[in-house]
Each structure stands twice: as C-alpha cells, then as structure tokens.
Image 1: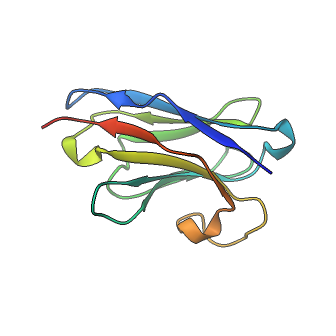
Image 2: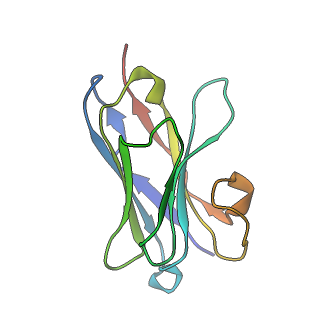
Length: 125
C-alpha cells in the first residue's frame, strides 16, 4: 500500500506563489510517474500537471502552462508543484497521485493507482 501525503497548501494573494509537495510513503515506490490534480467546489477533478518516472518529462494543463512547474526531488519519492502567478481560478483542493500499475495517459485521473488526501489552496478574489 502506498501512502501519499501532500503539504504546502494555504491562502495566498492573487499574483503570489505557493509550492506543494507530495511525499510517497516508501522509497520503493519512488521513480513512478506522478501527477497533480485539483478539484474546485462544484467542479470535476481536473488534471494540473505530471512528471514521468525519470523526472525528465513533464506535462501540464493549458490553464497552468507557464505558471506551474512539476519537479522531482533527487530521492524521487517527493514531487513538488511550484505555482506562480496564482489567480482566484486556481482555488481548489489539490491532489497528488502515483501511477504504479496503470499504463494509460498521465492526463487522466483513471490512470493513477493511489491518491493523497488533498491540500487546500485558496486565492481570494
């Protein structure tokens, strides 16, 4: 069983920055593709960004491209989501997930096998 723990959420003013971290419970599960998703009230969970097993390739939703960066620590079981130029539209619960068994596209939530509990990011208008 893999446990993922997100941290770093909070309240930030529009235009500000915030970094979320996701730590996988076991180093044995490091090196797997990991993704970030978010869900705002009344909306479906949506893809934000992802990183492949090596950390060499990243993928982003159009809405965050150029503002958000997904990166992997050298230990590979920790993945960060650096968020810049935040807007009220970025307000949501942010979830990290890891793909261990599935081999579908990283853009889809169904492609991930384990999820964190989520962390709230609020950008007031």
